[in-house]
Amino acid sequence: MKEKTRYSNAELEEFKEIILKKLELAKNEFENLRATVTNANENDTEDTSPTFKNMEEGASTLSKEDAGRLAQRQMKFIQNLQAALIRIENKTYGVCRETGKLIPKERLRAVPHATLSIEAKEDQSRR
Image (cartoon, rainbow, N blue to C red):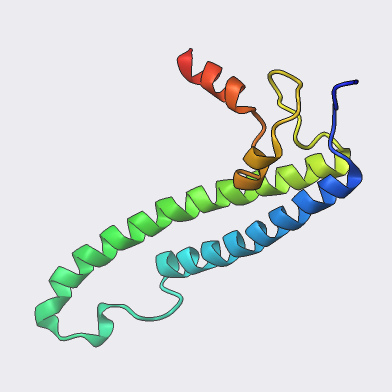
């Protein structure tokens, strides 16, 4: 029996649905983080008494820095998911870029933007 070299159109469609759902959630999370960083919700220390303002500004700055880092990570995740959609359209989705073999479905369901099989990822870690 010949080894499978790519996923079927039906399988690719299943992965596309998974990715689109994750992409929608990721974009919503990114917008929430962006709103935190830019103070879009208008909940700042302006409405508190001056006594607490100094303490809150320090916490607010730290919170904005954390939110900024999380927003950057979320944007990278969104870009990875969008790249996975392109691979689906090109019918190269699910093929390990190191070994050329199919990445197991279980891995792709857990990490739909994966481009490496677990074996290739472990080899990369050992280097």
